[in-house]
Amino acid sequence: MIDHDRLFKELISTFFWEFIELFFPEVSAYLEREPITFLPQEIFTDVTSGDRREVDLVAKCQFRGKESCFLIHVENQSQSQTDFSERMFFYFARLYEKHRLPVYPVVIFSFDYPLEEQPNFHRVEFPDKVVLDFNHAVIQLNRLNWRDFLQQPNPVAAALMSKMRIARKDRIRVKLECLRLLATLRLDPARMQLISGFVDTYLRLNAEEERQFQAEIVRIEPVEREEVMEIVTSWMEQGIERGKQELVLRLLTRRFGTLDPEFQQQISQLPVAQLENLAEALLDFSTIDDLRNWLSNH
Image 1: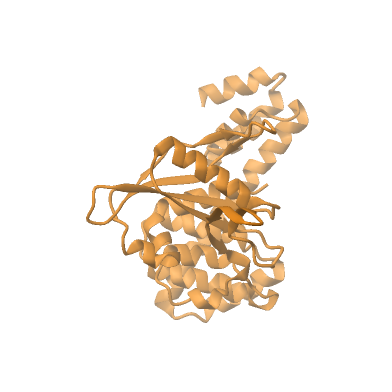
Image 2: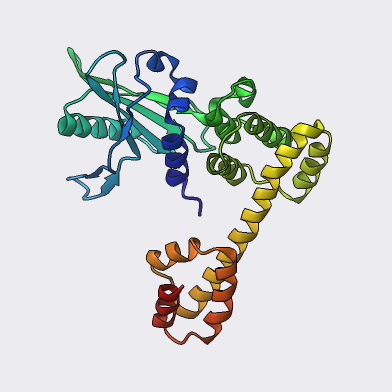
């Protein structure tokens, strides 16, 4: 299962200024670039249903040239949900109540379907009066055309093109263009890996597409091709690592049943060599304590 919220949170928190510049240039005009502080995870309880909900990302920002601050709340929604704007209003009200700062609410709709335009408001009204007219910004990726972002020298554009409206015949070209754009940005290795991993997660090619993709890489100019190939090689190495993680987790689940999230997290952080060692060691495990002891020692 893809942890959509985590991937989007990592992307936007790492490239927050670039995200604002790309989608909200009017906000970047009055937003001080520094300092930007990401607040701890906000958890709200719905008193009617008892559900606990986490707010994805809240940044405390400063108005340019002023000492006053405001919040930017970014929520990723990976599934279509009725009355989502109502939930955004609840988040807005509670954030405003807690921090007593203006809140700029943003929703990223990252699902593939439906394609219909999603609402950006929640209204409470009577025949004679509008009591509430709440609006939030919307970025609906499946209604954006990836071609409009090709010339944007922006790492967020390189990543999010992989989630925009893409015809089946264009999937290979989009992935290649994401890489070419990424190669021009000259990011450090960690940020490069974050973007390339995001693209590879959401634009996974089948065997035939992969064959055509490799053929297209050969046609790129030599200097650019070398940089693109470095990214592709990194994908292959990550794929091998993910495969070994999945195999070890399947073997452990078969032996001990569903593993606690703590164990899954520890295993996901093991390097390839340690995963191989664990794959051999687990053959001798009798109880879950054997796994716990092995992880403690390694």
